[in-house]
Image (cartoon, rainbow, N blue to C red; front, side, top):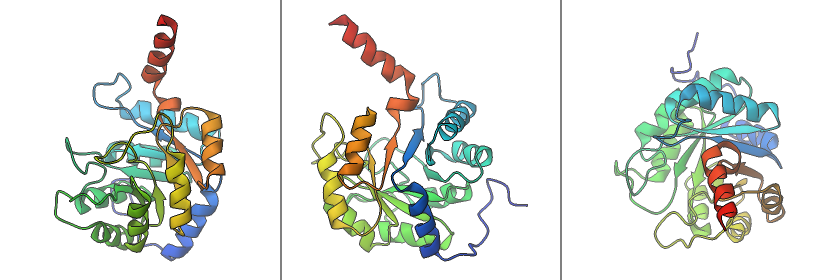
Length: 242
């Protein structure tokens, strides 16, 4: 029997069929990012699993998770719920699933989709994004391209990405950071690519999530506003100090 840490068995359906099925499951829905940084009191795989279970129970269509241990545990706890997995590694430059090795480890942990940096910056192993995509597809999973611009999104789709998200808007050099979600980028990506566009980044309210759908997003990722009580507490405390 395959364990969560073993490579997935060869897919019995085509990539196009799996991508279409995933797109249908995510259309107009919420994806919850269950992550906690090192040093956080929540930084524990069991805690991430409980967060993911709570999110799924209340309507999350998929979970975004970081690190092979968290991915494998969430996949085991939530059969049938797609997990978008990534592996953050490094202190600068490309950190979101930066190499082919990281991407294949995410697949082996059981993720249905591998999220990876698809900006035009060099990758630490010298690989291209297209090579990472090809490796993930060969291993039986799909790829979500995390980008900062519409041009990067179009290039990622040309390289084979199955979904595109503006996750890195405001987090890479040359990409201005907006106060709230970068809805202009959502609209630009929706106009530029023929793949599902996922809105992610600085979405703090249900109204902002709905606005992202109205601007062309296929689905919406929310993390901090749902799964980071420390950040939420800080916002409330700051408001009361004024």
